[in-house]
Image 1 (spheres, one colour):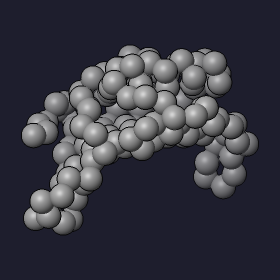
Image 2 (cartoon, rainbow, N blue to C red):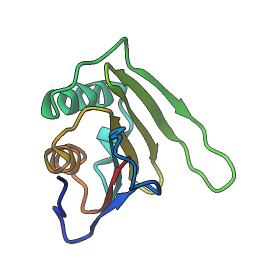
Image 3 (cartoon, rainbow, N blue to C red):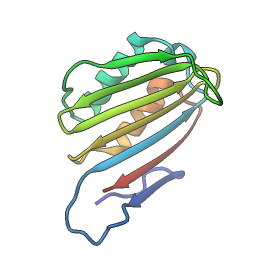
Image 4 (cartoon, one colour):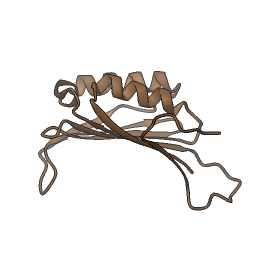
Length: 136
């Protein structure tokens, strides 16, 4: 069903892998050394969400929710966003000082995780990345 698609990608079956019920895919992306301009603009975040939905053939449900937080503790300032899709959600959290993006794509419908991964890396111009595909 799913296969390893990058050298540093891990695929995890959830703890109850003996269940025959499939709940969905969760792609967890960590993107480092990203283009700061793309992490700090609500316009670019909307463009990313629109492109990701097109890339994985998902339909947005409602508007994008995106807010910039001032950080605190160990976390730096940056945007967080949530886009509901008809099959679940796409979320993201950015730390501007580190030029880092943390993005999760979850859907109860199968999607091409490799395409999603490649789109995110290219869009944010990440120099380094880590990704995990969890099958629930």
